[in-house]
Amino acid sequence: MFAPDDTIVAIATPPGRGGIGVVRVSGARAVPITAALLTNEVPLEPRRATLVQVVDSEDGGRALDQVMATYFPRPGSYTGEDVVEISGHGSPVLLQQIVTAAMGAGARLAEPGEFTFRAFLNGRMDLIQAEAVGDLINAVTPLQARVAFDQLEGTVTMLISEIDATVFDLIARLEASLDFPDEGYHFIKPAAVRSETRGLADRISTVLAAARTGQLVREGCEVVVLGKPNVGKSTLFNRLLGSPRAIVNKVAGTTRDLLTETVDVDGIPVTLVDTAGIRQTDDPIEAEGVQRARGALSVAAIAIVVLDRSRPIEPDDHALLEETAGTDRLIVINKIDLPACWSSSDESELWGNDDEVAVSLVRDDGLPALRLALVRVLWKGEQLRDTAAVTNIRHISLLKTARAALMRASNAAERAVAEELVLADLQDARHALEEISGRRTPDAVMERIFDQFCIGK
Image (cartoon, rainbow, N blue to C red; front, side):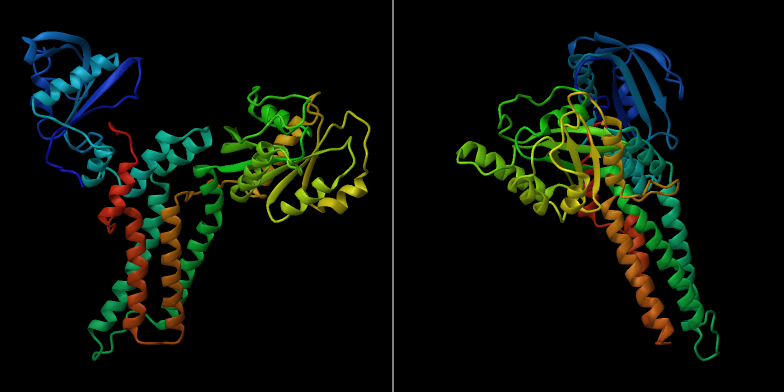
């Protein structure tokens, strides 16, 4: 997928202008290549920033920029190779000129994720930590960043390593028993195999039970706002965003299309979707908006159903409540500043024990309670625990594979079947664990993971 012997170069800071921009050079020839660009008379000292000029050797040594150059010798650099980072003024033009000059001196432009891939190849991190780098870069809430950094620090790596070490020990003892069948060497009894494999499967089950919240933090979810026209959907959408993103008007049917924005709700990145008012209509454009609203409901994790308490419950309300009955939902009773047209007993009949909150969006009454209610529905009564949080769907799938293999091994040991069969199941479990950490991961999977990185990381 990548050529690990080349010396590579790329801009390591985001696109656009800034106070500082960084060009990173990594590989066996990083030092001589950058030496051809810099005006320092003595070699760069390791881990010490040096003020120098970058020159264009193809343009008679013309100075391009005044920069700070820092040399990180292998193996203690980010990639595990010799790395030189050139910090210059954050003009895209200047930074690209430095990259071009480095390529002229023998470097190759890096592929997406290639610096981190080299860190993985050189043992600076495992695949779990490499994926955490990508998650940390892409984090849009503080909680996402915290979880990703914990994984980068090795919390999930340690968890997988502990389980893998126990499986490896079981495999070693079973193989030792198989090596000396005639002499009667039995290094582990079937009851012990059953107990230890069941214990490992239970431990993985505990991790997977908490993975829903971890995946929610990593990937976020979609929350769709539904209701009849003029019940306050767009106003609620704006209040949750904290800005007047959606048009609000007394004229029914103002919203005709889906409007989406991402908002941080208790650390979860929520894609909030404002929709057209759901009602029977002969207007073809409005009817298309209603159809799109129903489409948004079909893929949303949570529905916020907005009802107007100042108006009687109508067939459109009943239809919407029936349509959302199978979805996690929050009932928002709006316009409590106006006289009510239905009672609390009507409410219990309409939506039972579902979460509900009463608000007046024009007076901002009940907004704190609304946000707390939305948080309750999002977390489903759970919270992210202060333990290793598994958030990646690839890790979750492979942990399920490992758990299934361990359960097969446990059941086989309980029946005292041939040790070879138990050993095969344990090998399957270990293969799945090794694929998580990257010790046994197909090249196609690796390529897909690192291809999602930005160039320069």
